[in-house]
Image (cartoon, rainbow, N blue to C red; front, top):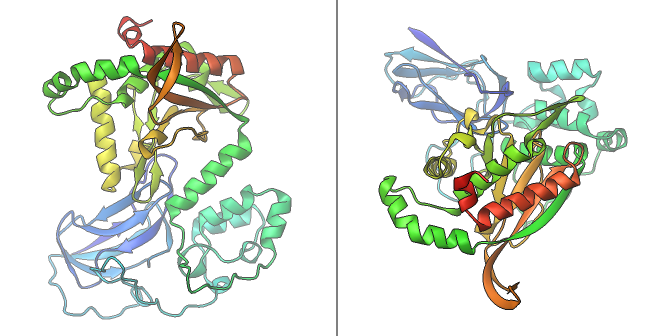
Length: 412
Protein backbone atom coordinates (compact mmCIF):
# COMPACT_ATOMS: atom_id res chain seq x y z
CA UNK A 1 0.00 0.00 0.00
CA UNK A 2 1.37 3.41 -1.02
CA UNK A 3 0.98 6.30 1.45
CA UNK A 4 1.44 9.87 0.26
CA UNK A 5 3.67 12.32 2.15
CA UNK A 6 2.34 15.86 1.86
CA UNK A 7 3.22 19.32 3.22
CA UNK A 8 1.36 19.72 6.54
CA UNK A 9 -0.43 22.84 7.75
CA UNK A 10 2.35 25.26 8.64
CA UNK A 11 0.54 27.64 10.96
CA UNK A 12 -0.78 31.17 11.02
CA UNK A 13 0.00 33.22 7.87
CA UNK A 14 2.45 30.59 6.56
CA UNK A 15 1.40 28.96 3.27
CA UNK A 16 4.69 27.94 1.67
CA UNK A 17 7.96 26.33 2.69
CA UNK A 18 11.30 25.40 1.15
CA UNK A 19 12.66 21.85 1.05
CA UNK A 20 15.69 22.27 3.29
CA UNK A 21 16.99 18.70 3.50
CA UNK A 22 15.87 15.17 2.78
CA UNK A 23 16.79 12.89 5.68
CA UNK A 24 16.08 9.70 3.72
CA UNK A 25 16.65 8.61 0.13
CA UNK A 26 14.48 6.37 -2.08
CA UNK A 27 14.77 2.74 -1.01
CA UNK A 28 15.53 3.54 2.66
CA UNK A 29 13.51 1.80 5.35
CA UNK A 30 11.53 4.19 7.56
CA UNK A 31 9.69 3.79 10.84
CA UNK A 32 6.34 5.27 11.73
CA UNK A 33 6.78 8.89 12.91
CA UNK A 34 10.43 8.91 11.76
CA UNK A 35 11.46 12.26 10.21
CA UNK A 36 11.74 12.13 6.42
CA UNK A 37 12.37 15.71 5.35
CA UNK A 38 13.00 19.15 6.84
CA UNK A 39 10.94 22.10 5.60
CA UNK A 40 12.20 25.62 6.17
CA UNK A 41 9.49 28.24 6.63
CA UNK A 42 9.72 31.96 7.22
CA UNK A 43 9.87 31.30 10.95
CA UNK A 44 11.08 27.82 11.89
CA UNK A 45 12.27 24.52 10.48
CA UNK A 46 9.55 21.84 10.43
CA UNK A 47 10.16 18.09 10.23
CA UNK A 48 7.70 15.97 8.24
CA UNK A 49 7.42 12.45 9.64
CA UNK A 50 6.41 9.22 7.97
CA UNK A 51 2.84 8.27 8.94
CA UNK A 52 3.59 4.56 8.48
CA UNK A 53 6.47 2.10 8.64
CA UNK A 54 7.82 0.92 5.31
CA UNK A 55 10.16 2.09 2.55
CA UNK A 56 10.52 5.55 1.01
CA UNK A 57 9.42 4.78 -2.55
CA UNK A 58 10.22 8.08 -4.23
CA UNK A 59 10.88 11.78 -3.72
CA UNK A 60 8.62 14.15 -5.65
CA UNK A 61 10.32 17.47 -4.85
CA UNK A 62 14.03 18.20 -4.71
CA UNK A 63 15.91 20.20 -2.09
CA UNK A 64 15.64 23.96 -2.47
CA UNK A 65 12.23 23.85 -4.16
CA UNK A 66 9.34 25.89 -2.76
CA UNK A 67 6.16 23.97 -1.90
CA UNK A 68 2.69 24.91 -0.73
CA UNK A 69 0.58 23.38 2.01
CA UNK A 70 -0.85 20.06 0.79
CA UNK A 71 1.75 19.56 -1.96
CA UNK A 72 3.04 16.02 -2.56
CA UNK A 73 6.54 15.43 -1.19
CA UNK A 74 6.90 11.71 -1.87
CA UNK A 75 5.46 8.26 -1.25
CA UNK A 76 6.08 5.49 1.28
CA UNK A 77 5.41 1.82 0.53
CA UNK A 78 3.83 0.60 3.74
CA UNK A 79 5.49 -2.57 5.01
CA UNK A 80 7.96 -2.65 2.11
CA UNK A 81 11.50 -3.98 2.31
CA UNK A 82 14.47 -1.62 1.93
CA UNK A 83 16.20 -1.88 -1.44
CA UNK A 84 19.95 -2.11 -1.83
CA UNK A 85 19.87 0.68 -4.33
CA UNK A 86 16.68 2.35 -5.49
CA UNK A 87 16.35 2.79 -9.27
CA UNK A 88 16.31 6.30 -10.65
CA UNK A 89 12.79 7.28 -11.66
CA UNK A 90 11.24 10.35 -13.16
CA UNK A 91 10.40 11.49 -9.64
CA UNK A 92 13.95 11.12 -8.32
CA UNK A 93 15.97 12.03 -11.38
CA UNK A 94 17.95 15.18 -10.73
CA UNK A 95 17.28 15.06 -6.96
CA UNK A 96 20.42 15.77 -4.97
CA UNK A 97 20.82 13.81 -1.72
CA UNK A 98 23.51 15.09 0.72
CA UNK A 99 25.78 12.73 2.68
CA UNK A 100 23.89 11.27 5.62
CA UNK A 101 26.63 11.96 8.17
CA UNK A 102 28.71 14.91 7.03
CA UNK A 103 31.61 15.97 9.21
CA UNK A 104 31.68 19.46 10.74
CA UNK A 105 33.60 20.84 7.76
CA UNK A 106 32.14 18.57 5.08
CA UNK A 107 30.52 20.13 2.04
CA UNK A 108 27.81 18.50 -0.08
CA UNK A 109 28.76 17.18 -3.49
CA UNK A 110 27.89 19.34 -6.47
CA UNK A 111 24.30 18.92 -7.68
CA UNK A 112 23.63 17.85 -11.26
CA UNK A 113 23.84 20.44 -14.01
CA UNK A 114 20.59 22.25 -14.66
CA UNK A 115 19.04 24.58 -17.17
CA UNK A 116 19.58 28.34 -16.88
CA UNK A 117 17.40 30.04 -14.22
CA UNK A 118 15.24 31.70 -16.88
CA UNK A 119 14.23 28.26 -18.17
CA UNK A 120 13.28 26.84 -14.77
CA UNK A 121 9.60 26.86 -13.82
CA UNK A 122 8.48 28.63 -10.65
CA UNK A 123 5.94 27.31 -8.15
CA UNK A 124 2.25 28.19 -8.47
CA UNK A 125 2.44 30.75 -5.67
CA UNK A 126 5.23 32.60 -7.49
CA UNK A 127 3.45 32.44 -10.86
CA UNK A 128 0.29 33.85 -9.30
CA UNK A 129 2.11 36.87 -7.81
CA UNK A 130 3.97 37.49 -11.08
CA UNK A 131 0.70 37.44 -13.04
CA UNK A 132 -1.08 39.73 -10.57
CA UNK A 133 1.71 42.32 -10.83
CA UNK A 134 2.41 41.94 -14.57
CA UNK A 135 5.99 40.85 -13.91
CA UNK A 136 8.27 38.43 -15.70
CA UNK A 137 11.00 36.34 -14.05
CA UNK A 138 13.57 38.17 -16.17
CA UNK A 139 12.63 41.50 -14.54
CA UNK A 140 13.59 40.13 -11.12
CA UNK A 141 16.62 38.06 -12.08
CA UNK A 142 17.95 34.87 -10.58
CA UNK A 143 16.14 33.69 -7.48
CA UNK A 144 17.38 32.32 -4.19
CA UNK A 145 15.75 28.91 -4.58
CA UNK A 146 17.25 25.67 -5.82
CA UNK A 147 19.26 26.20 -9.02
CA UNK A 148 18.30 29.89 -9.15
CA UNK A 149 14.52 29.43 -9.10
CA UNK A 150 12.43 32.37 -7.99
CA UNK A 151 10.74 31.99 -4.60
CA UNK A 152 7.73 33.82 -3.22
CA UNK A 153 10.06 35.75 -0.91
CA UNK A 154 12.17 36.93 -3.89
CA UNK A 155 9.11 38.40 -5.61
CA UNK A 156 7.77 39.99 -2.42
CA UNK A 157 11.16 41.55 -1.70
CA UNK A 158 11.25 42.95 -5.26
CA UNK A 159 7.76 44.42 -4.95
CA UNK A 160 8.61 45.97 -1.55
CA UNK A 161 11.34 48.11 -3.07
CA UNK A 162 10.67 51.72 -4.05
CA UNK A 163 10.17 52.12 -7.83
CA UNK A 164 13.61 53.64 -8.35
CA UNK A 165 15.29 50.93 -6.35
CA UNK A 166 13.33 48.25 -8.22
CA UNK A 167 14.50 49.66 -11.54
CA UNK A 168 18.09 49.55 -10.39
CA UNK A 169 17.63 46.04 -9.04
CA UNK A 170 16.20 44.89 -12.37
CA UNK A 171 19.27 46.10 -14.26
CA UNK A 172 21.92 43.44 -14.83
CA UNK A 173 24.54 43.50 -12.11
CA UNK A 174 28.05 42.32 -12.69
CA UNK A 175 28.83 39.44 -10.32
CA UNK A 176 31.44 40.10 -7.72
CA UNK A 177 34.63 38.17 -8.33
CA UNK A 178 35.29 35.34 -5.90
CA UNK A 179 38.08 35.86 -3.40
CA UNK A 180 39.96 32.71 -2.32
CA UNK A 181 39.97 34.04 1.26
CA UNK A 182 36.18 34.43 1.34
CA UNK A 183 33.34 31.94 1.55
CA UNK A 184 30.02 32.46 -0.22
CA UNK A 185 27.02 30.89 1.58
CA UNK A 186 23.37 31.09 0.53
CA UNK A 187 21.14 32.88 3.04
CA UNK A 188 18.63 30.63 4.78
CA UNK A 189 14.95 31.34 4.39
CA UNK A 190 14.79 32.35 8.06
CA UNK A 191 17.68 34.80 7.71
CA UNK A 192 16.11 36.36 4.58
CA UNK A 193 12.79 36.71 6.39
CA UNK A 194 14.47 38.38 9.37
CA UNK A 195 16.17 40.84 7.00
CA UNK A 196 12.93 41.64 5.15
CA UNK A 197 10.88 42.09 8.32
CA UNK A 198 13.43 44.33 10.01
CA UNK A 199 13.68 46.50 6.90
CA UNK A 200 9.89 46.53 6.64
CA UNK A 201 9.70 47.86 10.21
CA UNK A 202 12.02 50.72 9.33
CA UNK A 203 10.16 51.52 6.11
CA UNK A 204 6.59 51.45 7.46
CA UNK A 205 6.73 52.58 11.11
CA UNK A 206 7.53 56.02 12.52
CA UNK A 207 10.00 54.41 14.89
CA UNK A 208 11.52 56.26 17.84
CA UNK A 209 13.42 55.05 20.90
CA UNK A 210 13.27 56.45 24.41
CA UNK A 211 15.72 55.50 27.17
CA UNK A 212 15.79 55.24 30.94
CA UNK A 213 17.85 53.49 33.58
CA UNK A 214 16.76 51.25 36.40
CA UNK A 215 18.40 50.51 39.75
CA UNK A 216 18.42 46.72 40.05
CA UNK A 217 19.28 46.68 43.78
CA UNK A 218 15.81 45.72 45.07
CA UNK A 219 15.20 43.05 42.42
CA UNK A 220 18.65 41.54 42.97
CA UNK A 221 18.18 41.49 46.76
CA UNK A 222 14.75 39.87 46.44
CA UNK A 223 16.09 37.26 44.02
CA UNK A 224 19.09 36.47 46.24
CA UNK A 225 16.86 36.03 49.29
CA UNK A 226 14.28 33.74 47.70
CA UNK A 227 15.93 32.01 44.74
CA UNK A 228 16.72 28.78 46.64
CA UNK A 229 13.23 28.49 48.13
CA UNK A 230 11.70 29.36 44.76
CA UNK A 231 13.70 26.67 42.96
CA UNK A 232 12.84 24.08 45.60
CA UNK A 233 9.12 24.80 45.56
CA UNK A 234 8.83 24.88 41.77
CA UNK A 235 10.77 21.69 41.01
CA UNK A 236 14.03 23.15 39.78
CA UNK A 237 12.67 26.24 38.02
CA UNK A 238 15.13 29.07 38.61
CA UNK A 239 14.13 32.61 39.44
CA UNK A 240 15.61 34.93 36.83
CA UNK A 241 15.29 38.62 36.09
CA UNK A 242 13.21 38.10 32.94
CA UNK A 243 10.13 37.18 34.98
CA UNK A 244 10.48 40.46 36.89
CA UNK A 245 10.53 42.40 33.63
CA UNK A 246 7.65 40.45 32.10
CA UNK A 247 5.47 41.08 35.14
CA UNK A 248 6.55 44.73 35.32
CA UNK A 249 5.83 45.18 31.60
CA UNK A 250 2.42 43.48 31.77
CA UNK A 251 1.38 45.86 34.56
CA UNK A 252 2.57 48.88 32.57
CA UNK A 253 0.84 47.68 29.37
CA UNK A 254 -2.47 47.43 31.21
CA UNK A 255 -2.04 51.05 32.25
CA UNK A 256 -0.95 52.22 28.79
CA UNK A 257 -2.90 50.04 26.30
CA UNK A 258 -1.72 51.90 23.18
CA UNK A 259 1.75 50.37 23.67
CA UNK A 260 0.13 46.94 23.37
CA UNK A 261 -2.03 47.84 20.35
CA UNK A 262 -1.49 47.61 16.59
CA UNK A 263 -2.56 49.46 13.46
CA UNK A 264 -4.81 47.70 10.94
CA UNK A 265 -5.50 49.94 7.97
CA UNK A 266 -7.09 53.10 9.37
CA UNK A 267 -8.07 51.45 12.65
CA UNK A 268 -6.28 50.77 15.95
CA UNK A 269 -6.73 47.35 17.55
CA UNK A 270 -6.55 47.47 21.36
CA UNK A 271 -5.97 44.13 23.06
CA UNK A 272 -7.36 42.96 26.38
CA UNK A 273 -4.53 40.47 26.78
CA UNK A 274 -0.74 40.43 26.67
CA UNK A 275 0.97 37.88 24.43
CA UNK A 276 4.58 38.54 25.37
CA UNK A 277 7.27 37.79 22.79
CA UNK A 278 10.65 37.00 24.33
CA UNK A 279 13.58 37.12 21.88
CA UNK A 280 15.93 34.14 22.11
CA UNK A 281 18.91 33.13 20.01
CA UNK A 282 18.57 29.91 18.00
CA UNK A 283 21.00 28.04 15.73
CA UNK A 284 19.62 29.82 12.64
CA UNK A 285 19.16 33.30 14.08
CA UNK A 286 16.98 35.28 16.46
CA UNK A 287 13.45 34.00 17.03
CA UNK A 288 10.69 35.42 19.22
CA UNK A 289 8.51 32.75 20.87
CA UNK A 290 5.37 34.09 22.50
CA UNK A 291 4.15 33.59 26.08
CA UNK A 292 0.38 33.53 25.57
CA UNK A 293 -1.78 35.42 28.10
CA UNK A 294 1.21 36.48 30.16
CA UNK A 295 -1.09 38.56 32.35
CA UNK A 296 -2.44 35.31 33.81
CA UNK A 297 0.93 33.79 34.74
CA UNK A 298 2.88 33.87 38.00
CA UNK A 299 6.63 34.37 38.26
CA UNK A 300 7.03 30.59 38.18
CA UNK A 301 4.80 30.18 35.14
CA UNK A 302 6.76 32.82 33.24
CA UNK A 303 10.12 31.29 34.16
CA UNK A 304 8.93 27.83 33.10
CA UNK A 305 7.75 29.14 29.73
CA UNK A 306 11.00 31.04 29.08
CA UNK A 307 13.15 28.06 30.06
CA UNK A 308 11.16 25.76 27.78
CA UNK A 309 11.38 28.18 24.85
CA UNK A 310 15.13 28.61 25.29
CA UNK A 311 15.76 24.86 25.29
CA UNK A 312 13.55 24.20 22.27
CA UNK A 313 15.09 27.12 20.36
CA UNK A 314 18.58 25.67 20.87
CA UNK A 315 17.36 22.23 19.81
CA UNK A 316 15.48 23.57 16.79
CA UNK A 317 12.18 22.24 18.18
CA UNK A 318 10.06 25.41 18.22
CA UNK A 319 6.70 25.13 16.46
CA UNK A 320 4.97 27.70 14.26
CA UNK A 321 2.30 28.31 16.92
CA UNK A 322 5.04 29.16 19.45
CA UNK A 323 5.98 32.21 17.37
CA UNK A 324 2.53 33.49 16.43
CA UNK A 325 0.24 36.09 17.97
CA UNK A 326 2.64 38.31 19.91
CA UNK A 327 1.37 41.74 21.01
CA UNK A 328 4.59 43.09 22.62
CA UNK A 329 8.22 41.92 22.73
CA UNK A 330 11.18 42.02 25.10
CA UNK A 331 14.76 41.49 23.98
CA UNK A 332 17.71 41.12 26.33
CA UNK A 333 20.99 42.14 24.74
CA UNK A 334 22.53 42.17 28.20
CA UNK A 335 23.12 38.42 28.08
CA UNK A 336 25.65 39.13 25.32
CA UNK A 337 27.19 42.10 27.15
CA UNK A 338 25.33 44.93 25.40
CA UNK A 339 25.27 48.11 27.49
CA UNK A 340 22.96 50.11 25.19
CA UNK A 341 21.02 49.47 21.97
CA UNK A 342 17.95 50.56 20.00
CA UNK A 343 15.77 47.49 19.38
CA UNK A 344 13.77 47.26 16.14
CA UNK A 345 10.01 46.71 16.15
CA UNK A 346 8.55 43.31 15.42
CA UNK A 347 5.60 44.16 13.06
CA UNK A 348 2.68 44.47 13.52
CA UNK A 349 3.55 45.20 17.16
CA UNK A 350 3.88 48.84 18.12
CA UNK A 351 6.66 48.63 20.71
CA UNK A 352 9.56 46.54 21.99
CA UNK A 353 11.50 46.77 25.26
CA UNK A 354 15.26 46.32 25.27
CA UNK A 355 17.07 45.12 28.42
CA UNK A 356 20.82 45.45 28.80
CA UNK A 357 23.81 44.52 30.92
CA UNK A 358 23.71 45.21 34.65
CA UNK A 359 26.67 47.48 35.36
CA UNK A 360 27.88 48.87 38.69
CA UNK A 361 27.97 52.67 38.43
CA UNK A 362 28.39 55.58 40.87
CA UNK A 363 24.98 57.15 41.48
CA UNK A 364 23.86 60.15 43.53
CA UNK A 365 21.54 58.78 46.28
CA UNK A 366 20.16 61.12 48.94
CA UNK A 367 23.01 63.55 48.41
CA UNK A 368 25.71 60.88 48.56
CA UNK A 369 27.56 58.89 45.88
CA UNK A 370 26.83 55.17 46.05
CA UNK A 371 27.75 52.27 43.77
CA UNK A 372 24.54 50.76 42.41
CA UNK A 373 23.83 47.95 39.90
CA UNK A 374 22.25 49.86 37.02
CA UNK A 375 20.65 48.76 33.76
CA UNK A 376 19.77 50.91 30.75
CA UNK A 377 16.30 50.31 29.31
CA UNK A 378 15.27 51.18 25.76
CA UNK A 379 11.73 51.35 24.41
CA UNK A 380 11.38 51.53 20.64
CA UNK A 381 7.85 52.43 19.59
CA UNK A 382 5.74 53.37 16.58
CA UNK A 383 5.01 57.08 16.90
CA UNK A 384 1.97 56.70 14.64
CA UNK A 385 0.07 55.04 17.47
CA UNK A 386 2.07 55.75 20.65
CA UNK A 387 2.64 59.36 21.70
CA UNK A 388 5.90 60.41 23.27
CA UNK A 389 4.23 61.07 26.63
CA UNK A 390 2.74 57.55 26.67
CA UNK A 391 6.07 55.95 25.72
CA UNK A 392 8.04 57.81 28.38
CA UNK A 393 5.37 57.22 31.04
CA UNK A 394 5.23 53.52 30.17
CA UNK A 395 8.99 53.13 30.53
CA UNK A 396 8.97 55.05 33.82
CA UNK A 397 6.29 52.68 35.12
CA UNK A 398 8.42 49.65 34.19
CA UNK A 399 11.37 51.27 35.98
CA UNK A 400 9.26 51.90 39.11
CA UNK A 401 7.96 48.31 39.15
CA UNK A 402 11.49 46.89 38.96
CA UNK A 403 12.98 49.25 41.53
CA UNK A 404 10.17 48.41 43.98
CA UNK A 405 8.86 44.90 43.19
CA UNK A 406 6.30 45.21 46.00
CA UNK A 407 4.25 47.31 43.56
CA UNK A 408 3.65 44.17 41.49
CA UNK A 409 2.32 42.26 44.50
CA UNK A 410 0.01 45.12 45.54
CA UNK A 411 -1.09 45.87 41.93
CA UNK A 412 0.05 49.51 42.12
